[in-house]
Image 1 (cartoon, rainbow, N blue to C red):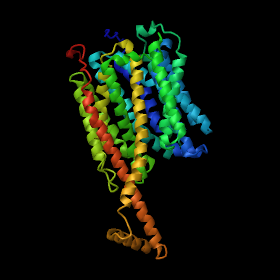
Image 2: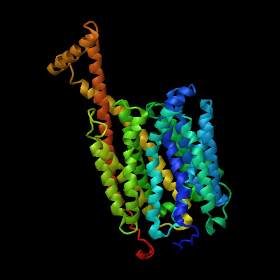
Image 3: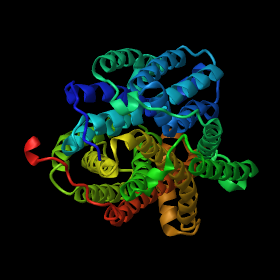
Image 4: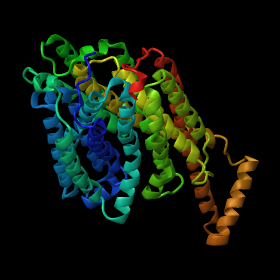
Length: 517
């Protein structure tokens, strides 16, 4: 690997400058989720129609991620990063000012396209600004943005929506974007290989194939459960279109002289297995982030704000562990930390798998904090190990693909979690209902107790009907709770299965003397 270019600016100032837009972008992927019902009501749309606010963002985001390297070489990485931040900020204002569903969907698509490049560009700049032996510390700072932002998003979004209006969930990006532009203009510059780069013409066909494949895949993941997956004809055709488009894209990128995305980077063993592990981890962590707020809101009756507060301690765990991981990353074999992180995440999944409807708001405090610790232990060293055997010239291209795999893993994880919850709830309901018959003594006792309770409040006339309704509701709640238990245990199993894959990574040794710390 070529020597790291001498950086005139303090690298920690560069880190602060590039983490700021990353935090803003990642937080924006989740901040709108709790505001969707309010957005739908304000713009006279149904809840299903309002989900396009999320889908349009994610689809545009996924398309730009792998293409960000070409744009940064063509226009200059610093200039392209500044343009993306400015466009993201303007689109945020348009989202907050939207007066119709079509307007906010278009604005969110522009926001997603601009935001798609922020993560890989920021990550590449950060990795190149630090010497190899300190890249673990740099990624710990970057990890604070990527790991903590999805946790802060729902909490902040719920508070803003309850206290003010959903529009301020987008307006808050404006001062953050302005500060990011000022800091990057002052502290970030392009290295020689970026300034002197000579790139070919934009591969419009490749970009079109990529957009068609990833965009259609995101729509399928978003609407699959709603339309019964392969039971719907349009989904079967859409999946076929995704396969054809992505296969054609891959073939084209290997055949043309100047590809939009250099897929040959997957010949690097660490990068290939690192992307695989990050995709699996993305599915697990985003699945967990989605599940817990839903459990608190749908089964325990929490408001969006309270549910956000309940899961917020995960951010505390991440903040606590990030500095420790950053220091250890340059001194010990990162594979041990990655394996321990997956093991700890699996352990917390098993604890979540024992939850019941009788838990208090503090029952899951420590498991939630530990899940944040586990996320930090995986993300930082895994990123370091994945990128550690690549040259600086490969960083931009590789970071775009790496972040794409994490986002795809997250989208698949959220979609699969939604599917399993819905279908296991039906299975669990059938299992519980088959043991409850009119002749069962336990059922008769329970029915009599509920009927007596209702009679004291509603009178004898409606007591039996109300008792039947309450019992039916109890069965539904228990079935739903058991479906959540099933998913938590599945996520734990996925985490444990990732541990053997960690040892397929080569050990990345720190370059430079330890005394450099």
